[in-house]
Image 1: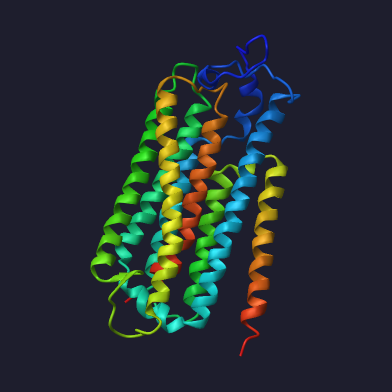
Image 2: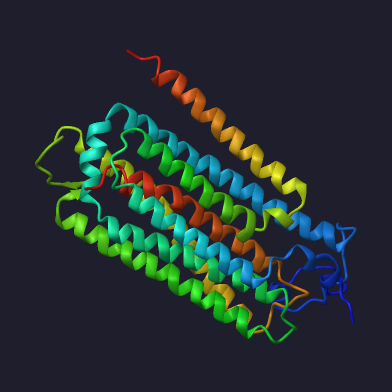
Length: 100
Length: 230
């Protein structure tokens, strides 16, 4: 018997194999982050670490937290929070970067 | 079943309800699910603001005291930090598997979900254990704000790095503790058969919280442990 759960929720749920795949990808990215940190690249070390961090975050958000199957309202809410955090950080820097 | 007067009893929290039946104020099941998800994401949004402020603080201090951060971060154990990150990432996997399992579980048949939740719980406790080991070592080396006995390079500004470190990593650890406590509750409730493919929103929402905790750590790890390791 088809239930409400079958109709609404099944189609957006990633199968367990995808979850394992994403986990392996996350561990690989962790390995890369760790090894690259020991290579002296100056300022670029931080940028690279953040880029890999954002890649890991994107994987967790998109698959584990199921943003891809979530209603658009959710994307709007979380996006709003990110924008607010960005604005706050920007305003904080507008102070500190202008100091002598 | 709701009492005829419509009053809420605490025991109602633990009764299995047929969630194909939609009550006021929801029009459809999708709307109710969307509400629960949106509510949790909104809360996670406030958490982004919370940690965002702390990350901004970190950035300002790292900009102002770059050499201090480079030198003092070498006092942190990179291998333990990396291990902790792997532990938390794996706990995210088991949490996602738990949510996946409950969406396929028949009522009274949620054993798999309970096991996955228990695994997540154990990984969470493992993370806290490794953290404790690190912090006890830091305390013994006199690197704890309030018990500061550091003498060496960057002595005048060194305590700042560890203030920021313990503030951010400590608050994150508090979030992990909260998650672990909630997981305990949910393991027990799931074992009792309270959740199934017809009633899984609480577990999905807890999953969102736990993944967020992992997300914060994903950024904390390179910013504190991988500043300039030797």
